[in-house]
Image 1 (tube, one colour):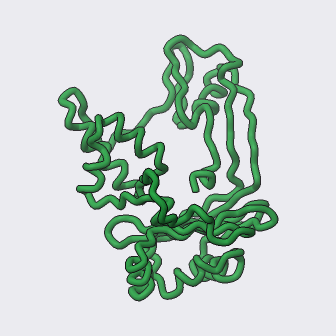
Image 2: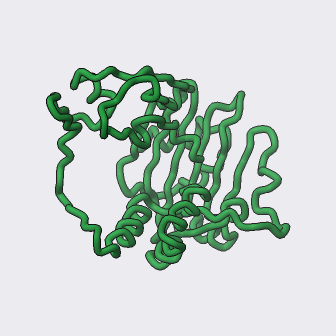
Length: 256
């Protein structure tokens, strides 16, 4: 979770979210001091791991499960809120119109006879793979001794590849490798590790992943784009509110 996202969540829960996340084992880090950022032309970014005095840029280096379960626990402390597990969302239901099981408001608009919004897309044909790992013990120990919680190599033209190795809770690490303009990793573990060793412009990820243990199959996404659905141009039924990614979604790579 980015620094602004963490501040927003903490504000929503009146300053209780960050303490609760820490208590649950969340890894709250100062990104500019405890991460290393590598740039194709300037090498290690000059502000990374800076020793001069400044306000920390706190970010949550945690699994999505921990981020969401912590928020859910705080929400359920409100006696007016209950959570129903095992429920299935039926889709969009509008009086006098057909119901769809699709989770996309734009698709549902089409099947219910509503006007479909114009869509704007910006794409660099980005693809990446992310997976949970345990690093080799000696590598994990070396990073811990140096107080390094993340190693990131950014993609800046002419380089098209990027990587991120980030410490999570419970001794887990999240590995991400990918590229723009069709330079995409595969799902197969051997090919994925080969991509990390041979295709990335910076050797950090390949070296850190040597001897690592993949804990779950990688999640692979390709052809990512940033999308804006122009609902402001059409008339929506009264009472229908379109939120979040249904309106605008960004390529997740920009979260790096």
